[in-house]
Amino acid sequence: MKKQLFIITLTMLVSVVGFAQLTTKTKSDKKFVIALTGGPSFPVGKFAKKDINSEKAGFARFGYNLNLNFNYQASENFGLTSTILYSRHKLNIDEIKKYYTEPNLSVDHYQYYGILAGPMATVNLSDKVLMDFKLMAGVAEANSPVFSLSNTQITNEKWNEAFTWQYGTALRYNFNENTCLFTNIYYNHMKPSWNFGPFSNGGTEEYVKVEQNMSVLDVNLGLGINF
Image (cartoon, rainbow, N blue to C red):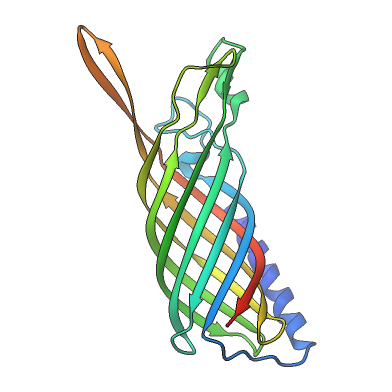
């Protein structure tokens, strides 16, 4: 999967740079960029595992994500960046049912939202095309999937905060001084945990802590404004 996404990113880069050579120069001296992007989100690692015997298998399926990106270009090659993100992934119920005999079992989704910020390095590929290298950290609020049996919930929805970090690259193609095409590929990771219970155990109440590694590769496309 990582190899395929690298090829996609490289293809986008070559296409954008090639197109830029055929157009007039439009160098923007604006310091700020805000862009709304969205696209597919691919679970990787334990989050994508479908073996119930694997530690912390997430059974997550292909999902989607939305990002509101903000850049401040402090100098030609360095700046600050931040993003507000949202993502949602359904679970692979067919794989889960392989381990249970109950045909009426169902489950909804993982979802999370958060805010991250960090440093950014910028390379000017041409007057119209810029590549940003980003490393960000922040906090996200993630929820656990809700399991149901014959349309009756057997687990409750849980939300909890988690530290999250993200790194990746973004390409900006300036249509003119004020607007740009914004595309990026990011790796995002967090490890939220949720407490379920209380459960009765010999007259005492106990809680069960469930922790989930959530790692994804996001590929986004959108429009931005230079100001």
